[in-house]
Length: 405
Image 1 (tube, rainbow, N blue to C red):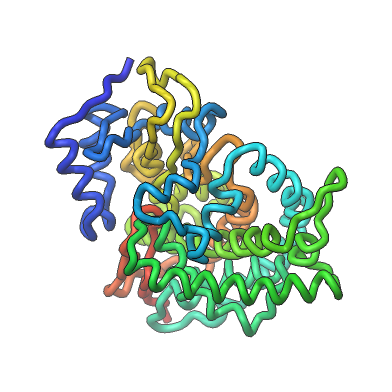
Image 2 (image 1 turned 30 degrees about the vertical axis):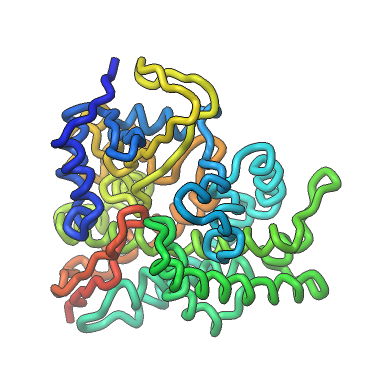
């Protein structure tokens, strides 16, 4: 049975995770918090989870839901629907609860199918080869590969014109900052970014409803299940979520994964020699440095978590990256081992909110990493890497690498 711990030492460690150095390398702090207890109480009363089993239970238990968006009023945003950044986030499948979530998930799942994803394999292989052909000298891996690959993959899937895709890198970073912290300063950048994304995608959806094409935007615009259809607002919000999530987290996976491999060159070489490791390697890279580090839920009815009674209204924050390094679940959790077996990282969430785009992200990474290792076995860091100053979405803004001649 776990014990809920609240102490000055724990509060200090949690505070450090809100600072740039703590966000850049949170794992030692995760370990120290978890060694105290896998369930601790933050100064604001939130219950923080750092153990694998505790995080997994939180993600999967249907009695735990997302915070109702009306509670944004209590942190100073009663007008949250007037903020494009907040409205788009808090009315999307990412954060709504059943029965609304069930309805939207059913409609979107009918369009975003495994068959549609698998059909992209030849196109992804061609994109990877084309991007690798362009790499030479010293390049920023984020700009040269980790961003263009997923943005073009999801852009092709959705049907977003190729020339329009590059603008979304900055727009997305500005908008998704509200997933880290909500302040007037953040909203001053996030709202215009979200409004631009919504206006652009809304225009495309209007066009597809009149002139449908063979793409996911058309499928969303015309999606129907059991006589139900997405409204225009729902289609725009869902398209924004799928597009942004479709490249933002995959960019993080590719950049975080390559950084980890360059820190472990023997594993990078092993991947080049063992293409059969593609699937377990991606699971290990997701576990080792997850592009999504945090999940949150609220208790809707009395539960027990790790033997601890928890009352309705309590809020949980799960540090998924901490759960992925829990030694109770993963032997030698701080060691990168691409042939690790029985690997089930928490990085794509769980339960009804399990990431809809997980198969696509996995497919891109399973193609990209072995291709990089085969083509450039002596690839090396070039210095000057810059971590994104965020913990919820963990990644790099710059990752210079040197391509051997």
